Length: 134
Image 1 (cartoon, rainbow, N blue to C red):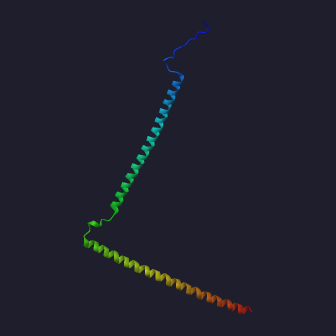
Image 2 (image 1 turned 180 degrees about the vertical axis):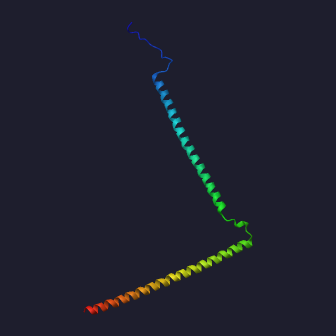
Image 3 (image 1 turned 90 degrees about the horizontal axis):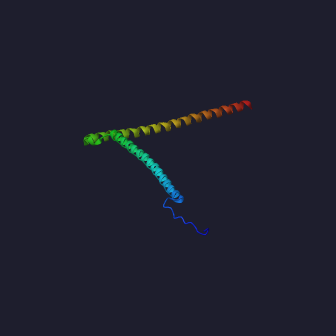
């Protein structure tokens, strides 16, 4: 009788390895959902930031558009008069620049002449002092 082996049929229940496998799969699903939620959160934040930047850009464009001078509302005679005044201003500015440049050059020349004469006078004085000492 000792030779009779008892054979127990496999239980229809869940074994330990199957239970561990199910827990691992469940843990992976939870980790996947957490990572997905984090990505969605970052994407949503970036979308909100981009929308805000678009709104800022639209406001800046509206502000710049309101600052522009609407030449389209002027008649051709008015725009011609404006261009004529701008041309006269440009000519006057050019003339003023030329006069300022000429004045600066002449002042520099005058300063150099004065400096040269002072140096000449100092050299003459030094020569006189040297003659007195000898």
